[in-house]
Image (cartoon, rainbow, N blue to C red; front, side, top):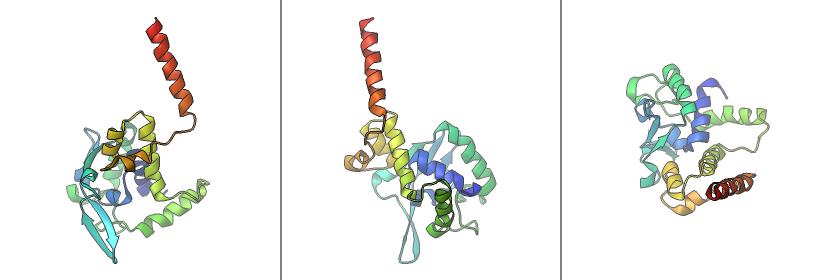
Length: 183
């Protein structure tokens, strides 16, 4: 991915943000000191118009903790690409003021996924990856719902499928518990 779009991939993959949430993020929504993204708005395109509104549901307005390894990346991106103060878009279109069009991102994303040997990868798969990674940390269903901005357990449960090799890790952890209790 071109350098100015790499943080989008990382935030989608590690913070499980939706495309419409990413392209409406502004510098005022990023708290690097506390490592938090304040998701309060999103963009949808309908009938050729760009509409900025609240997230899909009330649960969509949320604070998402940024994994610490991404904070320097986000800081650097803001310094290099966010022009216009606290209201500046993090990922603007070429003019620096309007919202990035999906087609602009897809042109470079499609080349990147080909280069990665994953021509099947869709942008939303990055959000899915972030959700699965969060589930693998042991996050509860309620914690996943909050992180992903889901208002129903059914939506969050889609991401709690078993990860390959995870059952062996669970079995090892169970043995550690048993050993600790017998000592």
